Length: 137
Ligand code: SF4
Ligand code: SF4
Image (cartoon, rainbow, N blue to C red; front, side, top):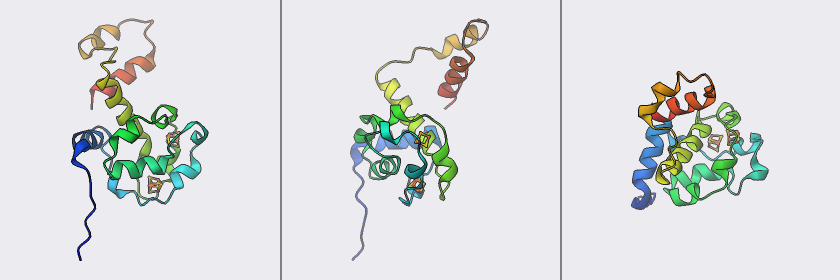
């Protein structure tokens, strides 16, 4: 008997979007748990990092985007450094956050305004870099 993995179609578009933004291979994760073992923010998370990976593999985008975890992630890249399969989970978390913000219409910086904002000396550098990262993907 041939076993096939059932991936729901419901969130196929969102999963593809995550892959496109992060440029990461979700299915490379082998669920070893090293990301969770090294994560400094797990006490603030409702879904552990390796569990986030499993939900993404199963197409359960709704569980990931509704989780507290994506906002608790400190983007420290410890998980990416520890992953034996070269999966950058921090970038996947960032991709889900971006999609969440876009779905809520919370893009505070419009792409057409970035050039002008860069001439403002009071603009925090981090805001400019974040905007460039957001719109360059
Ligand atoms: S360390 Fe990498 S392979 Fe292991 S569970 Fe985390 S993402 Fe998956
Ligand atoms: S990047 Fe996020 S998920 Fe990865 S180890 Fe740091 S806090 Fe944890």
